[in-house]
Length: 91
Image 1 (tube, helix red, strand yellow):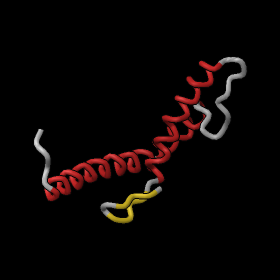
Image 2: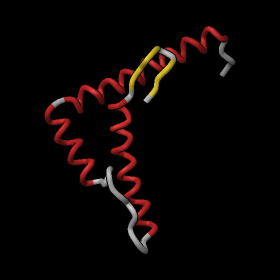
Image 3: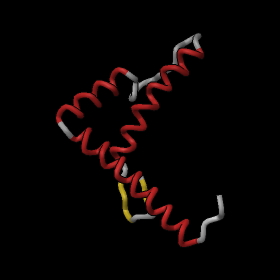
Image 4: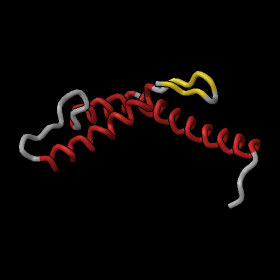
């Protein structure tokens, strides 16, 4: 694949950002609904978002539970994401 010019790279970056932003906005819309709020609250409870995932004496269990928690944290991070400018996103 040939190298892109600066302008081509900028255009590609803008397209990728637009796709990402659209995906984040879909998360926000989905979890803003009444059903979405119920599901998110259940996921937070089931997968220990606000608690410990440590399973004493079982490193594999701890890793498993932390993986579940990470999924819910990822959802919450997308919901909380704020876009200030097209090339500057913050949480």
